Structures are given as structure tokens and as C-alpha cells.
Image (cartoon, rainbow, N blue to C red):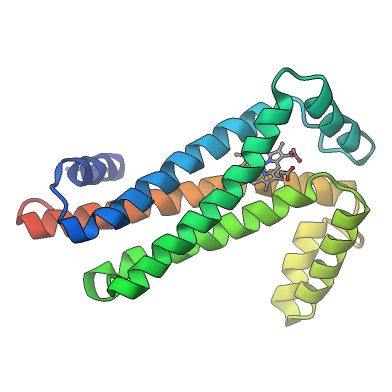
Length: 212
Ligand code: HEM
């Protein structure tokens, strides 16, 4: 019997070896580009996390240290910043293409949902990344957003409380924002990206008439 992991590998292999119709090559190119940018984002994020200190009295100094004293730190930070925006732009083009070509309908619907969710996760990851400098601007922006989230009934109050980690925005909030940014959201994006490939593999497999 096939395990889930074997199923995913088989699907990825199926995508790689199936000839793609010329009209779908653009979709595939955008998809691989998003995956490549995602790996670059995780790689530069891991490098940043070697020096970044997610604690209010140390955070500004650690970012300055990355920019001034760490070899190539300014470049790694710049790549991490711009890759997230490039990823958002490519995701938007990818989804726009699906709408224009109509490939979001029928067999493409699971891919459409997974793709839309990937983009939503990347928006939140970019937003949380920009809060990590924990300056006045980031502090008040997050406080405002949490107040708005709190106004959405019990669920809103629960989510805002879970992010804040208490009554007010403080060191715990920064540490939770950092762990969501560097662990929860990238893993969620990865699961959705693999699901996207898996759905695609199934579609191509079905078209070949071979194994699903
Ligand atoms: C979906 C993936 C990710 C996205 C979209 C993303 C996006 C961002 C953005 C936009 C910033 C602010 C950069 C700036 O303007 O200065 C940032 C900061 C940061 N990210 Fe990420 N990131 C991702 C994954 C990760 C991962 C996997 C890690 C670590 C394992 C990480 C670690 C950091 C750190 C330490 C900072 C703070 C340093 C700084 O302000 O430059 N990120 N991220």
C-alpha cells in the first residue's frame, strides 16, 4: 500500500515527466517560479534568524547588526524583503492567468483553492515579517489590527488574545509573531504548495490515462 509521502513524490514525479500542452506552459512556469522564490525566502529567513533577536530591547540592535556588521547581511535582508514582494506579484499573476484562461473551473478548482490560500498565507507572512522590527510604527499597526480583529465576536477575541498572549501587546506578542512568521506560516505555505502540486499531478495523470 502507498504511504502519503510516496503519493506526494509520485505526484511531483508525474508533474515533472508529463509533457505539458503549450497553452499551460505559462501556468507551470509561474508555479515553479513561486516554488523557487519560496525556497529562497526560507533560506534567507534561516540566515537572518541566526542573528535576529526577537526581544523588544534587542530587536533594533540585532537588525542594525545584520545590516552593518554581518558579512552580506544587508544583501540577505534585502533579498528576503524583495523576494516576498516578488512572490506576491507572481502569485497574483498566476491567479489572474487562471481566471483569464478559465483553468480555475472544473478539474482545476482544487488548484485554484490551494493557490488562493497560498497567496493569503504569503500576504500574512509578509505582513508579520514587516512587524518584526518592532518599532513604534509596527507596534501601533499591530495594536490597531488586533483591536479590529477583536471586534469580530468570540472568535475575533480568541484570535486577538492568542496573538497578543495576554491583555496587551508586549514581548510575548513579538515572540508569537516571530514564531508564526518563521514556523507556522512557512509550513502552512509549504503544505499548500505540495497540495497544489499533488492536485496538478493527479490532473495530468488522469489526462495521461495512467495512475492517479
Ligand atoms: C513565506 C515565507 C516568508 C515570507 C513571505 C517572509 C517575509 C518577510 C518580510 C517581508 C520581512 C521584513 C523584511 C524587511 O522589510 O526588512 C521578514 C523579516 C524576517 N523574516 Fe521572513 N518571511 C518568510 C519566511 C521566513 C522564515 C522561514 C524565516 C526563518 C526561519 C524568516 C525570518 C525572518 C526574520 C528573522 C526577519 C526579521 C529581520 C528583518 O527585519 O529583516 N522568514 N520576512
